[in-house]
Image 1 (cartoon, rainbow, N blue to C red):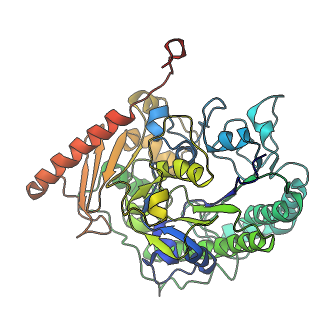
Image 2: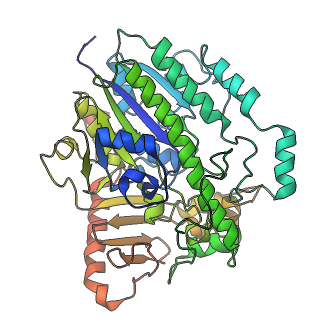
Image 3: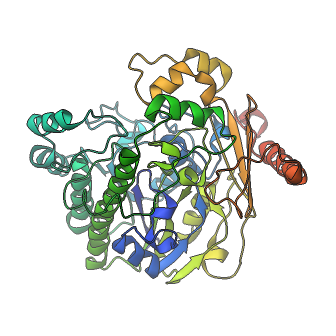
Length: 493
């Protein structure tokens, strides 16, 4: 075993907006003291963007360094096959101990994505993970948290009597709807303190549920933010809004969405973030207490963001590319990295795999789309790329096959308006954002004048040259990242 290999720790809140990390300086209302302290100890990539606005494809992109469309990832039901190389398989091949706490949402057969133990045949990839939330030594923590923290039937009934429970309805704060996050936090701390093999480097990923909807938090987090006092996200749809936004608003919250509900949604989303911040802080404290800071690379990262009331909407949508869904927190710290550095250059998820492997002294042995950000982190470069890209949506035939028996929320929009999920791609530069859809309904925003993306200027002749340039860039990106599969092993290609 190479004694110089560093540990890798990935801390992943689910669905956290980039403007909701205090260290990014975009939101004076939010309180994230633990994660802000982490940013001060490392390098804050303050303008980092997701490559897909859905959990599983985004997490796969982190681990492979490849754009989702290249390998056909576009739903939450597709996980990374065992034969496809990624960061984790590279570390396993170098003898790393591996632990994953929280839902999977990335790897095939590593464990079930639900809260039940996996059933795997001998030799399947999942058995190579040493520990997860339902293996011996950790299942007891999960069961105890479920028994002591999960909402009782009586608590849920009280909430239901007060208001119907939907993805966009903030829960009353008389129980912890995200009780499993406490289990995952305790599991990570137990691993660090008691279980890890001190003679091996380790990979630890902690996937917390918060701040993913439903918007729910116990006290004091539920009431931490006054809905009437916080600066609100804009609730109006953009002028020239695409079909996907219009249909979500019509079918999910209504065109005349209740203003008080939207205010409460944002406030409770903030409370969930502050509760998650406290839990992440406990994990970082345990890491320090074990003397692991200098021998570990820590990545704080979120898969994608959340509307949280912006445009009058909850959650996210695959073919919406607003910054509220694609701009996410990203901090790299520990392991000899500079402290207190903020990088404002554009970066995206595909940059993280080559960067993490580079920081660990390893090299990827597969084709990666992203850039190794090592020089940027150390101040030896000022830019790695001048545009970021994302894609989403489904092909015509897949949209025809969609069939949701329980058509609530997002599923109702899928069923009643499949075209809202038409394939789409985005390019975002420092100033402009272009979105093109298979069905038309394109978008163009001048971000310097329109931070909240409220004025779609696709048809504006003044921006005609900008539109043409960005369309060419998007075509060039598609050509560079078209699929390279299946591999033609018989001819060595």
